[in-house]
Length: 143
Image (cartoon, rainbow, N blue to C red; front, side, top):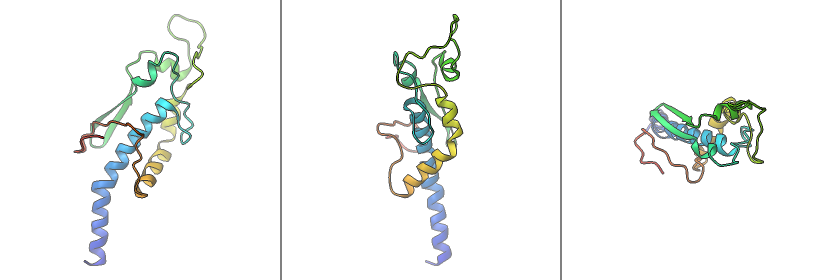
């Protein structure tokens, strides 16, 4: 095999294996950062007064190149922004765990997340948080 053939084989491996793995690992870390917080992003994670909001965040792989991590909790945005819930009164965080701006801090740190996931993968590790379940459209069965 010539050097050029070795380079082509390496590039093919990166394209077929590493890029999709970095994508799935990044989605997993985004979800983890929003839910539980992350020293990588500075996200405090979701408050857990009644543990409704935190488990509601779910990833959805819309196609091989796009994913959304979202929640169906109607007051999630008020919590993110730290504004009063409908009904008035000041915002009061009742939980000692978690805080505001988990989504914003995670979004602002997306390149840091991608770089961290890629570094873990190239070192031979699995960057997904323990117990992460995915429903990828990448041909995998999830883990």
